[in-house]
Image 1 (cartoon, rainbow, N blue to C red):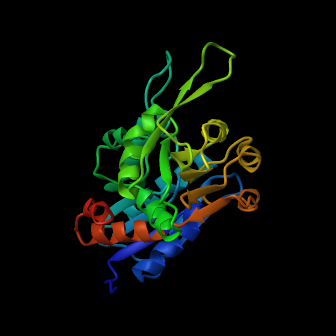
Image 2 (image 1 turned 120 degrees about the horizontal axis):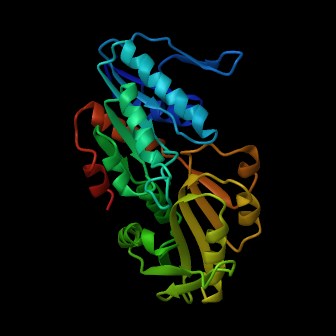
Length: 319
C-alpha cells in the first residue's frame, strides 16, 4: 500500500507497540517524536519530522497513569497544531474517564465531557476511538468522532478457533444487551443476560441468568475489565446454570486492584483482551489472558480517514 509523505503517525508512551503495528500495516515509517519529562516531572515533547500541511494521527491511550498519558496526548496535539499540520486526528485506543459520563450524585463533575473539551481545545480536528464505555460519548465531542468496535477482532479470532458452534453470548448486565445482541447475531449464536441484583446494602449480589446456557460454551462480552469482581461472579453463576465452559471477551484490560488474582482463581477458561492498554509483566504472566491486536482495525480506519472513505462500511463488510 503506497502512501505519499502527507500521512504521519505519532505515538505517546502509552501506545508505542500498537502504533508500530499500525504503521507496519499501513506500510509507513513511524513519525519521529521525542516524548520525555523534565526533572520536575513536566512532560516534554518535540516532533522530529516536518508535518506542515500533513495529515497527522496521534495514537495514545489515556490508560494508567491516566493523567500523565492524557497530558501527553494534549501536548502532542498542541505541538502538531503549532507545527501547522493540515489535520490532526486523536486516536484513542482507550478513553479514560469515560465512566464519569453523568451526574449520578449531587455535586459531581461530568469528567468525560471535560476531557472531550480539552482534546478539542488542544487543537484536534477529529477523534478515532475504540469501544467507548457508551456510544453516547461520541456526542460529548464537538468535532467528528469515528467509533470503532473491537467485536470484529474477537469474532475473527473465535471463528478461526472454531469457538462458535455450541456457543452462547452472554451480556454481563442489562446495559450491555444491545452490543451483546449484535455480537451474537454476527457469530450466529443465541443470547443470554446476567441480571444482577443487590437485595439490600452490604448484601452480596444475586446473579439471575435470563436465557439458557445449559450444555453450551458461554462467552461473556464486555467493554473493559477493571477489578474483574463482577465478571468472575457472573462466570460462576453461568457454570452453576450448566454451562460447559466460560470465556470472556473484553476490549480494554484495565486490570486494577485485585483483578489478576480474581481472574487467576476464577472458573474462566480464557480471557480475551485487546492491546488498547499494554499489559503489565504480572498480567502477561497469567496464562488465561490472551491478547489480540487492534493494529489491523485501527490501520484500516486510518487509511479510510486519510483517503476520505467510509469508516462505517468497515463493519458492514465484517458481518
